[in-house]
Length: 144
Ligand SMILES: [Zn+2]
Ligand SMILES: [Zn+2]
Image (cartoon, protein in one colour):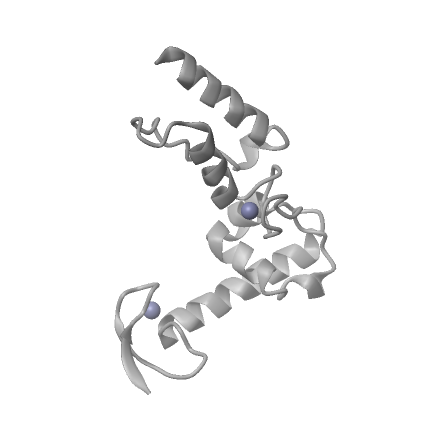
């Protein structure tokens, strides 16, 4: 057993095998899980963003539950998988990481980065996330 900073709340806690976050956060996460699970069970076709809206649980956490397979028991068909890495995503075809990588490949790495587009991959970008992203990049290149 050793002492570590909790990655969620940054408090110092006693770390033990298999426990990566402090007890308080563990409890909070479990509570969040119960909320997500209950909501999803009643709303089998809900998207991650709808769950996020309804339960106020962070998208990141919902995706983590999803990736851990903990939501499979609800019977909901939640989200497609990223075509780049196969990870769970809320909408579109690629996860944030893959979108980021694609963008890095498209633009000159020594040029100033365009302003961040925090909305990429969020519900508004549904289905055309990749296309819209590409258009933005083209515009960026043209405007230079
Ligand atoms: Zn914590
Ligand atoms: Zn990916």
